[in-house]
Length: 155
Image (cartoon, one colour):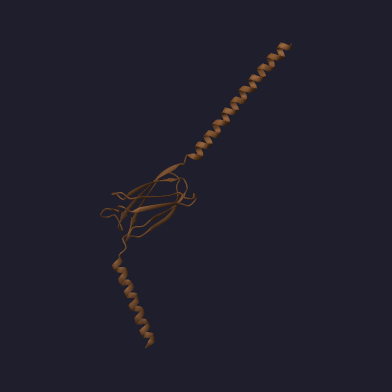
C-alpha cells in the first residue's frame, strides 16, 4: 500500500511538473509573440503619380522632382517624404494610420489632403500650372478699378 501511494505521488508530481513546464513554455511563447508584434510596424506602399496640365488629351506631362510630404495624424513623429522620379511617380511606405499629404511645386496648384492607410493604394494628380502673368494683370486691373471708384466718390 505504501508503495502504491509513493508511485501515485511520483506520477502525480510528474504530471504537475510537465503541466507547469507546458504552461511556462506557452507563456514565454505568447510574450515573445507580443514583443514581436509591438516591434513590427506594418507598412503599405502608397504610390503617388503627378502630372501637369488641365487634361490628358495630348498626353500627361509627368512632374519630376516634386517633394511629397506625409505627416501622421495619429502617431507622433512619424513623418516621411519622397521625390517624384522622371515618370512623375513616388512610392512612400506608410504605417497603417491616418496621414496628411502635402504636395507643393513652384508655379503649380498645391495639394493637401488627409487619408487613412488601409492597404497598398495609388493616387494620381493632374496639377494645373498657375499663370503668374494673368494674376499680376488682374491685381493691377483691380487696383485701377479701386482708384477710379475712389476718384468718382471724390468728385
